[in-house]
Length: 192
Length: 379
Image 1 (spheres, rainbow over the protein chains, first blue to last red):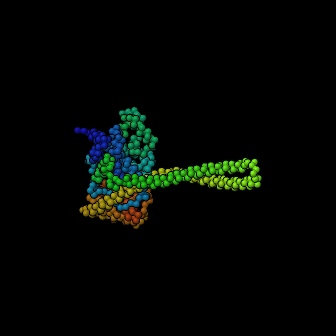
Image 2: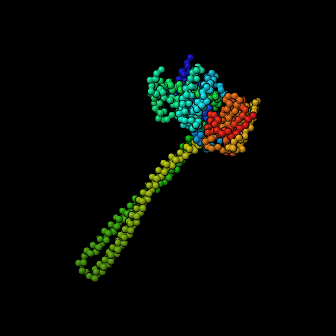
Image 3: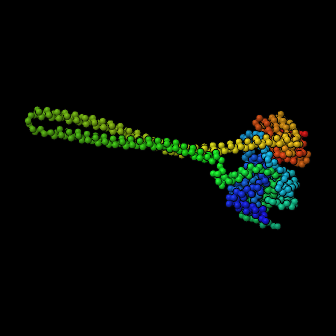
């Protein structure tokens, strides 16, 4: 039986040959995970759906940008999705002053596809990640979350938290380091 | 294990998150691309940990529409002509037609000027020919005067039939010659005047010709520029129309789903209500009412909310009996008239809510509540 990576390699090779079915298969496999991350960052369903589409369209347009040497495909998709979402969020913040907001323009959700909170595809993995995050000291956890989900630079983090640049960097380093250790100690083989 | 690479102690955590100095970031990228296995391994581990952090986001499924739209976009790539909607199918033709009209109009203008130029050139040529003809006539007249005079002077007088008769004839002939000479002189002066006029007309025609040529060149330049500008304007209008269609479609979908959400919320079994009021002078006379249930989500509507500075936004917080004790429900959207609204999706976290608060946070919202508490309400 082929491993998930082998499956991905095959599907990716098909995408490079312009096979739409292969891209659809990859979309069905990873879209929930990528969408959850994008939605967590932009907090707007319609925008997140556009950005999810852009993420997979980028894979369709430039499959050669992904290289197996850079990690797994889902890892690459999450990185692309995060970058696209953070770019969108920065642009939105810049033009917020000129945007007249109307009710329902922001927090949207589709009644046909209600969100399932706390239910990752792999419940054990979900639990392990949450426990690992909860095990971090609050300052490390919030600094890490702001850096990852809000894309704040170190300088912005320092201004937001009122801490020095050095403290911010140390918190990020320790936070990620502890997250790695915690995930290992939970015996979680990351499917990433 | 002892490291053999000088980059092994680098901040791969900070690199993976982004936000390092660009120079350092470039140096570390170059090092990774050089193929250092040890550092690559470190970087991947960090990247995996970060992706695990991404995986901690609550699972939210995209609507089926996204997949449909994506596949439609992809099939359009493969066969653009088949998938275009009727309007967009003909839009490029409309643009091309408009460009053609502009080019024809400019071409007609150019043809008119070229015709005028050709006429001016022909007129100049005719005038030159007339001038040459008149100059020839003038020469002939001058020659004629010379001949007549010499003829008159060389008339033989040796015949002595009748001196007085001869003298009379000679006088008559002399008068005739003098008259001819005067007429030739008058003709010569007239011809010279005509030549002067023709020369002036030639000069005018030459000037006009130069002006027309210059105008033609300007018109050609203008045509090139106008053509490009018209195309740009049409392309901009096309893009604007596309954006408007997209915005209206989104608004229509949003309006429909909002209605469904409210119905779902109001019909949910454990519907609860909390009224919020201003607890800070900055909140003014703002009030808000929240309806919520774990199955139906949260709907909160506020009134008389003061306008916030550009860099701030309103954020709604759930205050709960158990952990997480305070958690964000989302950012409240605000209208110009001070009315605000927020829909939040159904969540188990709505089961143990005891109070709600609205704070002002930096634009984009905060992970944890740090702003000023402006409105508050408890059960």
